[in-house]
Length: 449
Image 1 (cartoon, rainbow, N blue to C red):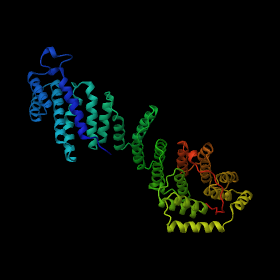
Image 2: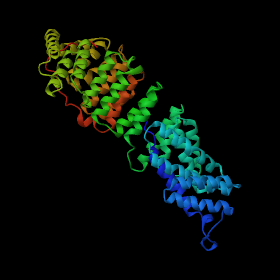
Image 3: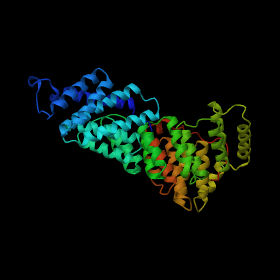
Image 4: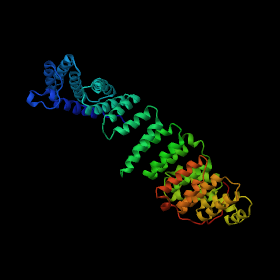
């Protein structure tokens, strides 16, 4: 995670502390200049404070140091300690800017030095209430940079309670909560921020979605992770994002272990629909899986598309060999017309579902839809698998409502998750528009899945 810039933090402190001291009525030279409530300062403290103020404005930090030390040494009440710590804060911030954030060690020194006067100012009764929130936010940022996330969250909450407003505060509170171990709570809070952006007519930054997904993924909370993936893809439905989501959620990590070949093919079909098949490796794996499942028509179609798109090298020996083998199987297999007739005569829906899979792979979506519905009617089939494929066929045919109904009928994981991703594609408004036109299968195909 990117940490808050120490230079920016120091600059903010200079403006806050320096500006505060520069305008404090208690340091006015005479009573005519004094307005508003006055701090109770001894002459010794006032004299040293004015000298320190003058030196700070001139960036004479050596002289300022001497006078700040004098103020703190002479301070006997909260007002005097407030002025002394405010001056010290301004001094340290100025010194930090001169030194710069050359390395991690310098950053750590700056943070450590700034923490003490901030703590003193936050707890001092004489610190103006309007400044407490600012100091608490700065202190929280230091704690965050020190990876003391629970402390950071406490300071951020104090800043918020004090009325401090800053566009970074809500997100920093989320990150502090997440990094302190409450990933679910932080993600829920971030979700509220996303909703607030949406309500204001804005789209939340993509980094917010990626942050939540990355953190949730490590908790193995598949349901919440998927919800965030859906929100991300709805807001940023690029082909690259679709590929990243499908690869990470379906093909890697703990979720991948639950995905068999049929489920992987359904995810590859989604990659094809979202135009997120990226390279030769994607196309060859997709094609090989469909061949293994007895769908040579789909194998042949995928390889042809990959070659036409320039993603598969025209001279690829692997692609050529697989395409030839698929064509050989197609030539030997019984025609889909014959299989359809037999499927309608069967008592159960197994052959209807298998033949529908072949039609789906060949791009004849209407025939696939009819046979999937017949399979569900006859029964003795994997209902979740058939409803998933029915939803895919309807989606690719452009029937958004019908596809959604079919996907909603899927009840068990991981097919519920696959269905959710397909529904997300439909919900983005791109599903029906980019679905491939139905094309009757011109050649016979195997039908076993």
